[in-house]
Length: 474
Image (tube, rainbow, N blue to C red; front, top):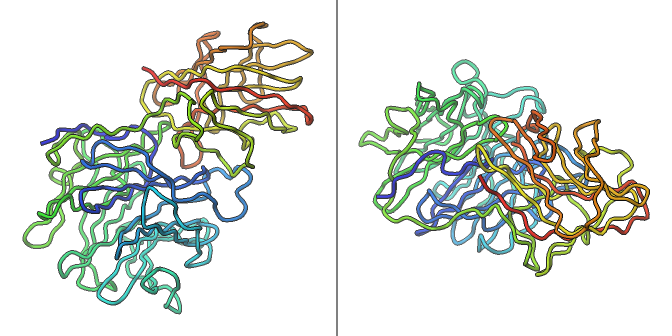
């Protein structure tokens, strides 16, 4: 058996949903305002994962500016009659669907299934000859939460057949903020697994019934104990083989690092009761399946491909031509912004901080114009950036935080420039240039990110940088 330790993914992949198709497991997670959106990962053992694709290439309108915490929330992935379905909520726009016959290939453009504000965390289920979607509600958009809703759709999730949604479970009294429902039909029973009680200190609820409309028998399946694992939150029940064996994947909130991914043992007893963890408590380690897979997410990048690595996203949709990948390095062109505000600057490559303690280094060549600033660092609601600017014909190494910029020294060389930053859990960020350290709070709903950008105050700038290598180390 393969022994593992939690978390199985030490990076911000919140609200994971997982399915098995044959011997393959596929995971999707929330991406919020980062694009491409809704990452897809693949594994054959539930422990070792690789990033293989994204569902969303083009979001709904309005994401050409940074909208922190908005966008693609907790989604679900399902496989039905040879087609992969991903059901994605945009809490200000509605519930959307994308489909594919190959998770590695192209996914269809988003199609709105159910328009309106305040719907979140949808999950479809096919029962006999009918199709349903279970979802939750966002109080800040619709005025209430703690309830689970249901709509009936056609088989391909193309049209809603219900006149309105039905409330199938009200958790106002027992399960405040119940959300993230994942629905399953196992044998003759319908099961809904959903977190309640909040992200940091919540618990996992199990609802069971012979009807999708209820009434439901309620139980607490997974809760916080005294082993230091807080609030076992949103996740997925997975049949790990054809022998009626199960596992459960969920996230654990880890402050500024984000929401890391945890794997739990699971079982369904002879009475149809779901069991998660050990004695309903999450585990620090366990065993699963029989074969270890060598797959992993590679957070470093040699920039030697004509395609951008999947590890990079942008915090908004940006115009083509801003970056040009090649086998000789990735060319990043300057982009104008009148205000010196890197948080609202959409033209930056971002990737998740991916360990409790790590160093990130960037090697690049610079070809700057007057007014250009090449910046690299860690960003959340604030930032710590190290970089190079060109002012009055000279190049200066700088460190920037919100509303403050410090010149370190003048430099003469422009090739092989090395910039580095360090992260230490939960939110201490530093750089070695002058031993500067700052505390950075995470963005709304997302963990801290490394970011790279070339911002300019010169509207006629033709400056650019060639990124040569990005390296993650301990």
